[in-house]
Length: 265
Length: 66
Image (cartoon, rainbow over all chains, first blue to last red; front, top):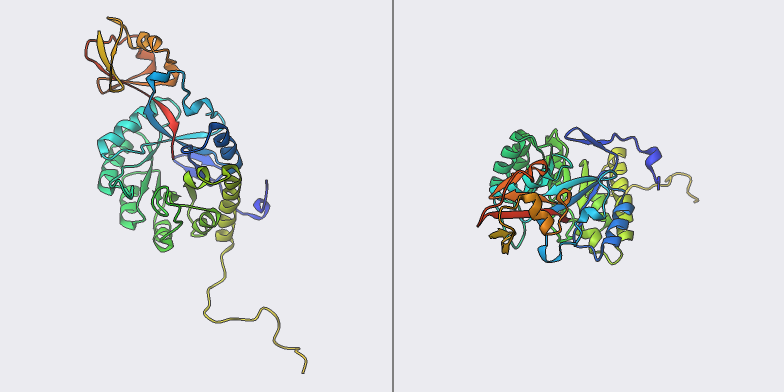
């Protein structure tokens, strides 16, 4: 699939010294089965794929980790600290993830509220500082709040990941203004993470000029995850292309597209 | 000898190393990360650490997540 790519003057996405061609990143959770997950990731064209750190199930020790189905030579594994509610827990999970031996990147999440899964930005900043000191490339999942984003950048995060809307909500980009402002003010890549529901959401998000987008549920919980992954790939490319093209100004009144002269009497 | 693995009390061979413990549990050392009494043990060092009564051991791996 090379749709529109030929006309798209774009640079690859570089985060923490690593360069990626695809601006779409995807998760590996909540798929109906592993085969669907593998085919969906392939259809998405994503290079960066997130995984979580959890206890091995001792009762079924032959149960395969997600790595049994993913080739770390073909994809870039991005471990998250999902489920952590304190800075100390998130730091612990990040260290365990790095020990798996793939890379020193971490998608840092510190959740502050069970109902909304919104981040605890104070704890997030605290954890980010520690992990950056330890040499991690921190991609920080955060609110769509400019000042927090600036502080995370100052702390040395490799990328800042404001949410579109709460994790798994599928509500789409609720505050384009905030995300645009964050993108305008930060030097590090801005990757919108969480909240996308369907392809138009991904497109609108990319049209804000952000560097990339990360999603999981929108693909995994679609009725046909593989087709939705394909749609998300196209939407991400389309949104990026539209941003680079520069949209026409909005106007409150109509302007005819056809000549007003030369009309019959 | 009893140790606590992933929050569960388990009987393991007395004086076993972490590497031997993984073998007992039928786990591939390359596929898990080991935390021993809240300290991460590098893969290369798993054979050097002996487990003692009451030790807390966490065995983790990557699962699907967003």
